[in-house]
Figure 1 (cartoon, one colour):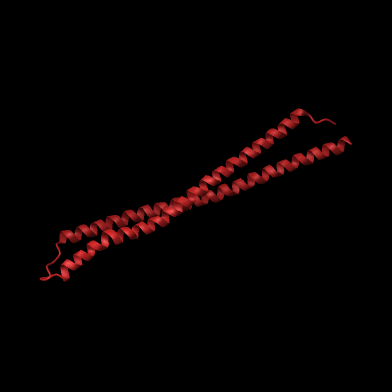
Figure 2: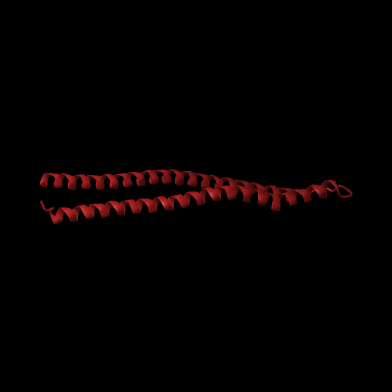
Length: 148
């Protein structure tokens, strides 16, 4: 028995569609994987940057204020405006860092969830494509057995 060329064309197009779907799912998973890695790296880098800024910008100023207030001759008091400015700067920096950090963690967590879902979806598409191919092979085998 000769197979209908239309059926063969449909099988090939179904196989091409399945392969295309698997490629798209893999590409989506790859992009989400990289985005997840970059976001978690940004979270870690944000932690390091926060403390570097504290050590480079804030702590030397506080040390200077303490030095000027207690270790110089005469022990003159530090002007309130100076202390207020330094503490205001620290408060702004800490709050901004906390909000940015929280946003990065939320984005990284959401991206992680999307990555896991995309990975599962890609696996299911790959299984579906494999099962479709096995089904086609079984149909062809059954048609050959019926022909004999």
